[in-house]
Length: 251
Length: 386
Image 1 (cartoon, rainbow over the protein chains, first blue to last red):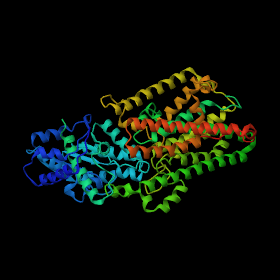
Image 2: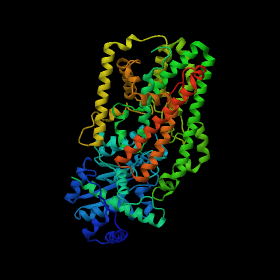
Image 3: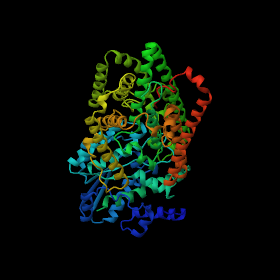
Image 4: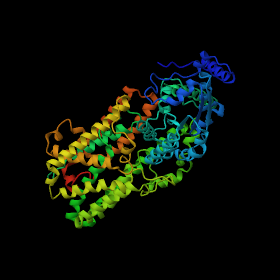
């Protein structure tokens, strides 16, 4: 179903995306080219982000704060502009030209759920965001943090944000091949799912999406070449930016 | 149950738990949606610990009555040693997997995050902490629990003889304290906030209740366990848990089906690490039901359908370790070829078939080495359990 792009189309897409990022007037036909196809029905059943989607459509101010670790900082691509939150901002601005979209990326490397939760009151709420996208669970899985502890921390964070009238979306860990016997992501992914179902917040299933891309041959997550890996990260974050934009704007 | 024969129900459900553990441990396995964990609060771990406690109470309780405290303690110690060796074996498998995946762990796409796994930075410390049961990576969490519970068991058994109610009461109080205060836990590596995945201070209640039932079972039957109202309540609770839990499974498969009773409140009683109330209660009511519905002499247990379960349950420690090894290998196969549904099915069926074959082989070997030797070692594979 998902055909792998050839490397030339790939390069063209990359250049096109880079170019588009600089241009104020977008050419949306090319923009589509750069995004990875998302599986049919991805995120269709997640709770919609009504307030944010409405604000985008109406053309009001929309502030989105992102929390998370290295993969949200964008370290592997080598620059903040290439991170998925930046790409998200660019795509949304293009898609909703009348809305004033601002994405504030508060991710820091190795940020735990506890670290992030500790920053909400002082650093996140004062920005008066419409939406907070909280990427979490990776450090917990790597370190094997107590699952109940993780659940309570994220739950408290969600409650705090919603109490301040802010919409919340969760985002799961990155998918990787090979590491499952060493690092158990399963329980932490389940916690996000359960929190979402119990609290009616959506989860952006990055783990599942990356898995689908890897399985479909869209992304070669195993490449050994370090230059290629940087390109891979750049492409991955761009694809994620597009997919998150679709996810946020669902109605 | 008779004095001489094995209670096949124990072997059967232990075998069932073993298959579930294997299927649950294959990453992303579709079939894991339909194991014990999808029809009850809790999963194979609860079944395993309860049965292990029951068996321990039966076997070592009898030994204590006939041979005295010292002999029974030495037998327990021998079993603990076997479990410890199995734990070290699983650690070797874990290290081999790390060696295999170290490339991915170092990949720049993940490095920043994955390299925070402390054991990569100080493998020497990790080895020592694994030997001291404090390092419990993937798959290595349940044996340490079983080891400490069994090691403490001779003393509990002495308590059972003199003040059974006091001992059981204290055990339940300790469990309740663990539920109320998350700080009551054993420290694990890597620190500072890490604790044992299965908190022995919580799980001991299930193990010792099982042990008490097994110990008493040598002498008594419990007519009160068959009271009609108790069985009815147990059936009601078990059915409600089944409906609720299975609705979550269906919800995962097809989102518009509602996940019944999935609220913040429910999750307060669902802790796996501390053995939350719902998990504890659920496995106990299932035990009451099984006791009522399935006689140890039921022809079903000696029949063909039950045979694979019973034979695996009989060699539980070996088959448990084999299951973990197979789960790791199965994972490598699935991640290499990207397991679709068919692939997952093939790996699952093949794994279970290998487990059955090895258990059957062990049966065959035990029969070959003759009953003469078995007279010298009564009560084959003692204690059982993970």
